[in-house]
Amino acid sequence: MKISACVIAKDEEKNLPRLLKSLKGKFDEVILVDTGSKDKTVEIAKSYGCKVFLHKWNGFADARNRAVKEATGDWLWHFDADFELEEEEFRKALLFLKGAPPFIDGFFIGVKNLDFKGDVRTVSSHIFIHRKGIKWKGKVHESPTVKRAASLPVFVNHYGYSDPQLLLKKAKRNLELLKEELSSLKEGSKDYNYKLFYLLQTYNLLSFKEPPFIDKALKLAKEFLEKTKGNLEDYGFYTVFAYNYYLSLLFRREDFKGMERVLEEVKKLGLELPEFYFYSYKLKRTEGKGDEALKELLSCALLLDKMLSNPFVVPYGGVSECYSLFESEVVKGEPLKVSKDDLKEVRLLWKRRGGRNLGLLLFWIEEEEKKLKVIKKLALRNPNDILIYALLIPLISHSKSELKRYLSFSRIPKLLVSSSDNSL
Image: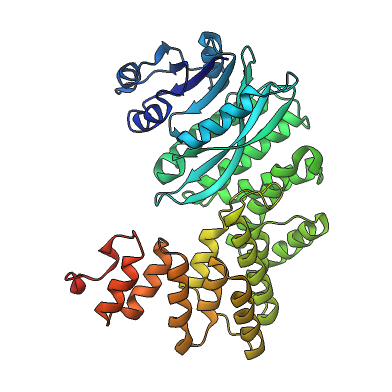
């Protein structure tokens, strides 16, 4: 069995060494299709022994198909330049490929999208491994035309989210490609609806930089959900995240009546995502329903903790972007006022179940004199969590011995400690 690694790249001198270093010694060949680099991409690829082919840009599928044409492996594994493959993940994949039944011609793998801190921001799933000869389609958000695919518990690291400016630049590029593709597809077809979702996703991202795009994104969210009509069999992942974008956009517009209506739709469909609980919490809090708000935020925290141990515990979910929403709320937000009985219930729940996010919620609503005890336990259970240590250190900064003790458990740089404690 021969396996080819296929990479498409343009001006990727920053990311390419990390990827190629992680591929070295694993594959029978590495095919790199360069679509017009003006930096040292080609030079770097050749230095790692890649077979390099220069190709005029005509969309992503066209570039991947050139790699398919040049590859000689029985299996082709496609990578973006900002990916990284760890040894253990490759070994797992190799076992599955060796035993793959003949009717399977492609595999979904997990993509861990890392933020600038190196933390997993989201987990997505794509068909990046397939048998030789299979073609790709789509100028953007391309996919291979496999007939039967299975999912592998194999992951690659993706660093594309670590640079927000680059993310926005790619979104602007994708915007025009998606518009072009949509104009060539039959309205209402599956391919049309998939591209409609990606256009919504792109406008949603761009709206954080250009607020007028919020209206376009809202219109697209409504259009997509109307066209797919809750057809979870064909559009499961897309439906869930279309609702997620819809709620986020409505929240930013402060359209609370719209949020209430959409949350009712989500509830009727039985969809679950931490974001849905979070936006329900925000809605209940706006309405002054503190006890109901706590219930929703508690559900959010518990689900986030489940997903930390198993990203796919939520159907269609993966690791959620809700971590940042939740963290911002319980660190910077005005603490939710809760009854003594509700506070006691959260304490008992954390004592029984533990959990990083449940602990942060308790710390947020806890009585002042008991906050330190909670954050100390959290720090010991999560010794390399920057956020938890950022909350702990100011509370124990008066005691150098205690600072030394907690920092000894962690790899977190002592930069978190104030300059007055440099003697540590």
